[in-house]
Length: 212
Image (cartoon, rainbow, N blue to C red):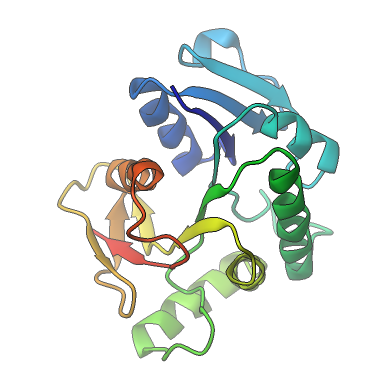
């Protein structure tokens, strides 16, 4: 049985990811800034209390795991000392920490507004990007820093770029690595896709768009 480290486990998508991973029988180590009652955690989940932006917390979470999944998003409020560069710097550190633990697989969540290299940028993505920059101004640029760092590494990385994440809309998941296939994606379908990548090399070192 694989053991997974999950960063961003208390957010909307992170919570669903933890539930789905536990239902598939994975052993989990999750990092959270606050205590979570054991009754709220599925079986097989070990909670590490700490901060993703703290190296000691990350290293503790990585011990003995086989792969990393991250749904790290924007800070909970607009008032933050974090900068976009911090996301890239932490990703650089995380890569080194994973190598120390001999972990080579990471599945990372970004957004459809995240630009990869010099790919063409359609008007619909500019709208999505503008919307995000208005409400959570750090997230797009921070995710681009992460993706830039990952793409230069030799890890088996996959960065998934969803549009608006919504619960309970159902549908069928569609993927494309050139053009976003839709404007929203079902949370359950998204986390299932993330976990499916653990046993697939289809999207290794690629950044697919998804939608439902």
